[in-house]
Image 1 (cartoon, rainbow, N blue to C red):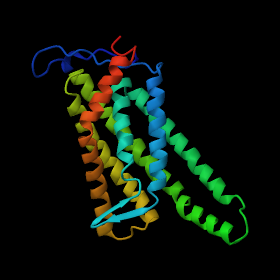
Image 2 (image 1 turned 90 degrees about the vertical axis):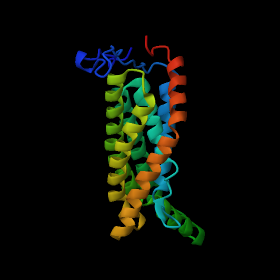
Image 3 (image 1 turned 180 degrees about the vertical axis):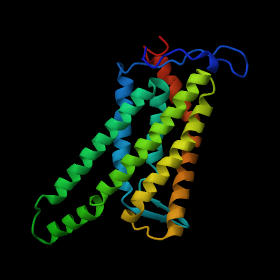
Image 4 (image 1 turned 180 degrees about the horizontal axis):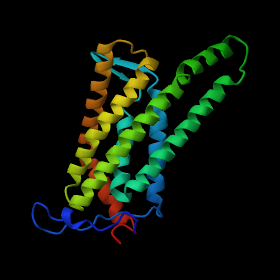
Length: 242
């Protein structure tokens, strides 16, 4: 059992009903499930960082090209936090962004390498610089935002689990996601806005509000799916609840 499987203090046991809340269970990371979740989360974050370098306008909505991917990283963060605990979730966040930084450095090297000196080569170089050139700033924005937002999200989820045990999973998922997504969106938009061409206050406010509402609503809509995935993994993790 994970080291986070500690007993719940008496003050946190059955405050409302007088019943005893069982200490929360967490799985160890010895099975293949954690590695698969971590790999998927890293790929999603890297792709969303590339997509976020493009500003997107859909009617009155201002967003970026990574808008449809990034909420999925938070969903995976919820799964990891619920099944494996806060310490493992923190390791997953750090690992994911170490990989993102490596990807960003790789883009920089690719752009810096001398290319063919003809019209086609110069066109390809310009396209690479336009598509991948802003990514380091986006990675910085994403790194700080996801590091803080996902850490808060994971911490709140685990603290709520310590109080309720295996009950009210939906409340943990929704409560932690709202706070985490707001912090994440505010930090990310503040750094990324100039990179994608947002320069005035009304557009920036639109960018922040749309990003926060969209990502939070997507996570809320996916709560039933997230809960099913969590329960599926819990049943198959040999060390969960052991």
